[in-house]
Length: 242
Ligand SMILES: C[S@@+](CC[C@H](N)C(=O)[O-])C[C@H]1O[C@@H](n2cnc3c(N)ncnc32)[C@H](O)[C@@H]1O
Image 1: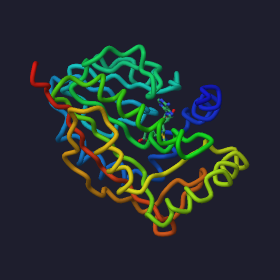
Image 2: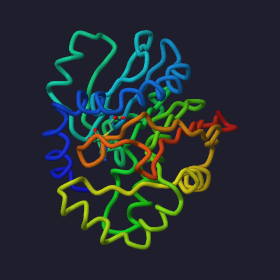
Image 3: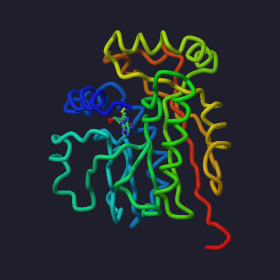
Image 4: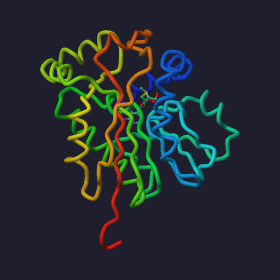
């Protein structure tokens, strides 16, 4: 994981990211809101990691909303500076060493996992496992992890695995961040089998897309792409001795 690369990519873009993505995919974020808002307890403590300045849920009754990202845009911080329950911190989802164990009731991860791609499939998958276990670590027992992740059809994921290196080279060529998108099924399997014990995958549902998707910075009709967004709800259990 090269922080400099992310910094360059998202910090440059994040000034305009929120506007651009909302113009292109606002109808998708409305759909995702209907999955997230009912799960956020009033008065709870919520961490939104890989937030990117997108707050597509009702945070008004939360005791605390911490928006974390590997790169925080000063412009976004400025927008929310007078909202008393919101703070921004810089943190890497794979090693949130500035976040205490069992601090949050809810952790939200929206469209971040595909950015954890590296040189090969095995490291990429391990990055995802590391990130998900970090999210579980910072949850209180009984707390929930909400994931809304960009996913692809199984046939496309097979191509991604078969042509992993050329795919990453293409990302480098077009100066886009390296991405690897899971199919809904393979991310489900990973969440069921690779997380620390005492977690339960309670829901997996298709959110779908809006009418358009921002693809390589361009607004594309969604029907052209073999993609969707999948919602996952993982609950951290309470250990017997607690
Ligand atoms: C596609 S954007 C998604 C932003 C927002 N959550 C949304 O739904 O639109 C991916 C975000 O993940 C952040 N990100 C990428 N890698 C990260 C990491 N290792 N740790 C924390 N955030 C990361 C990026 O900075 C960016 O803001």
